[in-house]
Image (cartoon, rainbow, N blue to C red):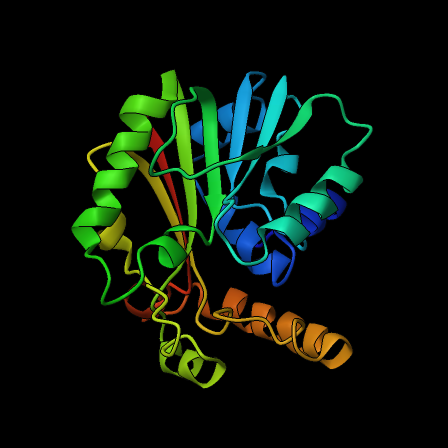
Length: 241
């Protein structure tokens, strides 16, 4: 499926850098689940929103959205101030402190983009710790029939080039699809060979051009004979209670 991006503006604002690649993977979830979550009208929590992306904005029918900022992060004050100003007139959006390892709220949907790799860094945790947290969030923090969606950076064909940009130094955890196979997993979408990092973050004008080129190459290679083995730069996983 080639994405037509009918809702280009909302996806671009929601996913931020390399938004086409992240959107492509998100929209690759099994259709019956995708339609349910896009039309959800209950309580939504986004864990780890940032200055450049607030993924929960795609849930336009949500009754209430909590943007959960990790208060111990070095840039948490900057992020909170930015979000408070940006959503000052949106009464259904709340900015809260949130550590998902110690959290008691219950939601119809929880979503987090590029969160698990930062919490569970290499050398400080194991993949079992990742699965334990996913299971806990589903069992403890979702309402009956609720959804957890994780969007994570995967180990794709060009993963080694990430080391150039400091991923090895900061011990960020990258995943293979099977690393996220909780017993609650219902649908998973993987995408990308080249879309493993965004140049637009470093060189905006030229970077956006290269991001678009990488995305087009990924779309072409997505149907190739070796795609299932090597495409996993972006992994979107959906879990249901």
